[in-house]
Length: 486
Image (cartoon, rainbow, N blue to C red; front, side, top):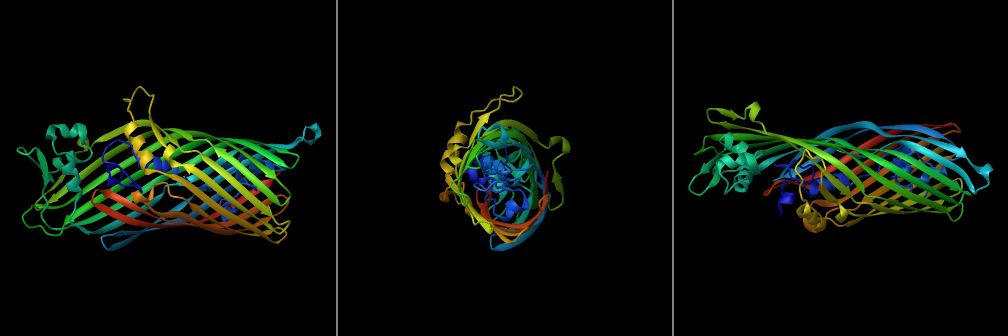
């Protein structure tokens, strides 16, 4: 398995500052969140529109509004992770909560101009498109150790060179005396013996991706709807983990255990453009089509690491002044998207919609920063790796709404998000699946909606070259929405 995957793909924090395909994966594979109605129907609105979250799928969806609207949606829930490592299962839970959507649509009646355009809409607001708040823990016994990784990566380098090349890994182990240096072979060796190590790693992530947008749309003869959307993404990702190993056999060595900690923080701003159209073949049959440009973003990473080692008669720690810290700024391009949609409206009884997204994850790229405060870097190798490990993917969302009686609605949806990684990489063990449902009440002036959404996936987490844990993740989210027409 290549180094790119050895350092952890699910919630990765690196031993050094180099970016890799896990960063592209994290910011490229995003979901759709929004109003309770939108989420209850699986985020499937590409040919329906007239929802405050619909412009993130197809900007022409705002063209379906004939009145002005304003609304807000809040969510709450929890994520449960079950980690399987060396025959042991460990569970961890993390609460969720925040704003998933806020938007306002100003609709203007243009019918008196006799141009064919009946309404035009200007909209702006916020959609959350990914959430990183999570935690998981795994523990179990195995012979391979993180110290093996640290020692092997620095073989051939002298101790005085460690600060330049391995300040966040091998140098910490060397300075805490968990590793020693052999002058004859010019290599490093750990103070481990032939027994197993009891591993325990806890990973916690925070942050998310939010998109602020400005949208323009128009209604032509109640037949053709056109729209454009400019999105500004706010990106924040924080990752910290604590890795502890304890010797199960302490014979012939003074070392008893060690603890390695890593903190990683990424933030930045990105931009994209969306164009879309909805065409009504009839009042019942509707088609939608949208193109999402790549998202171009500039990110800044900040990272630090620490380590301590416990011996038979002492504990060795890194002094506060010697804790390594680093930062780097760079650019990324996330893949664009093509969205095709079809909807059928059953008169006043309800509707069905299906969206199909096509993404080419192989187009995700790194680019060096133009900030003169940072040394330029050629990402040719990393971009070539991205071409190798990523693949084309298709997302499918199906949603429906049933009018139980005028003003009261039942909704349900399902979403399947295709794998970004090739199967040979054994990273995404299955596709993301989303099941959802909800109810809504609508009057002439306002709507109140509630939904429940369940997301599940399974991935491999690689702590280092010979240490792999399987993470089963399950997230349940409830969304409450309210909107007013004016």
